[in-house]
Amino acid sequence: MSEYCGLQEKFEGLPVLARMFSGLSLGKQFAAYALHTERLMNAMLTSSGKQVIVDSSKLPGRAMALAQIPGIDMRVIHMVRDGRGVAWSLLKPYARDANSGLQKEIRPKSVLRTALRWSIVNLAVEYLSRKLGPDKVLRVRYEDFVSDPVGIMRQIGAFLELDLQQIGSSLRNGEPVGPGHQVAGNRLRMNGSVALTRDESWRARMPAGQQLSFERLCGWMLRRYGYL
Image 1 (spheres, rainbow, N blue to C red):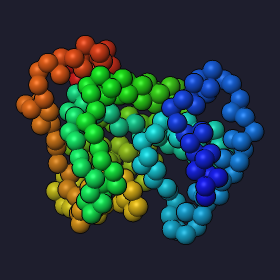
Image 2 (tube, rainbow, N blue to C red; image 1 turned 120 degrees about the horizontal axis):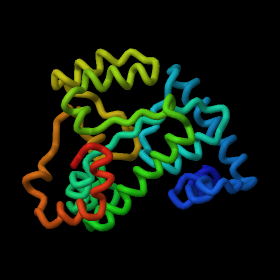
Image 3 (spheres, rainbow, N blue to C red; image 1 turned 30 degrees about the horizontal axis):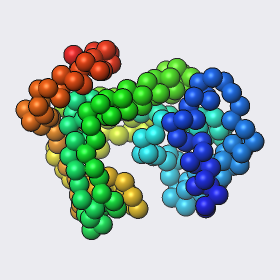
Image 4 (tube, one colour; image 1 turned 180 degrees about the vertical axis):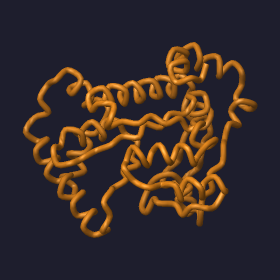
């Protein structure tokens, strides 16, 4: 396991994207990474009896690495949220609280830092989508999802060749959904259930100067995704 974790750090981070962008070889160690990953995926399919594995890691570097493994049929759902909302969320500090699902202290991130990372991550996924082709990547806006969960789940279902109609209806009706994280992840996994709610508090609470700073840095991408 420690060997695999080391390989993940080597091949799934944003820096490795530069090698992939340039077409350089990933080296001999990538074969070991691919073998371990494929075995892990097959074991998960066998033990769960499911046909699809949902990887919620949200790391474009990981998606790019998985895309290089021939034995994995990967589809990418690129969920975008207005970057100003992301920046507002990351401005909030959280103290370490294991009982609430926070394994470590979360310090506030500056608007500049969030703007740069938001741009880099979304550009990386767009590059990935060009490499994989339009039939392998689906872009979904968070705002559209919370406004029309039935329509968006129908769209995702068609993309994945799955019937997700019931899930969409449950989300629209405000029915609680059990968290899927088991070991680590979003702190909401510690709640008994989660209901889909729209959160755009940033529009009223985020200082105008900070919103303007984000727009100056990332205005072209906000326009690209229909936010300006």
